[in-house]
Length: 156
Image (cartoon, rainbow, N blue to C red; front, side, top):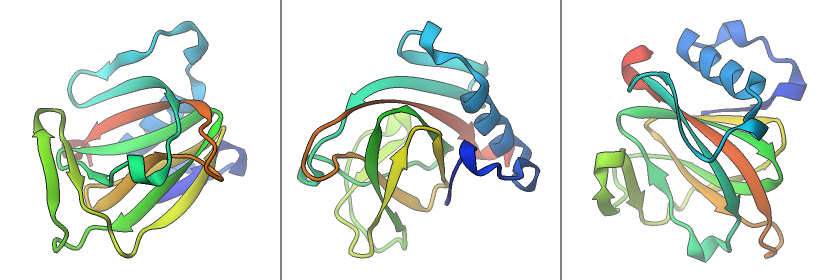
């Protein structure tokens, strides 16, 4: 997992080329002119999903994993908490009904910790990084906008 911010002036050349491309796409695209939904970058190898969301109490969210894609999540506005935990293989998948979208939901992870993501932050979740996006701060739902760039593991 990687967590940083475009305001930190990280040297993106240290990251794999596909991850660098995804972060630069998210940081440099004017999403204010785009509708929510899928944005094609490189066919099925790399694409973005743009969202307007409202954070929820933790009990209304579930940890998720992806097997075929890395998530590069970029917060365009607003803020949320995002739970994170390493996947050990011992955790139980409780919902694979969206496997065609490479989305698998899991039971709670005992080692889960939380990132506080704000405008300009980005997180890179690899297939063994369980993540629980969309948790509200201090129990207060907030609106936010983010883009999730899906990077095929074949590009790494």
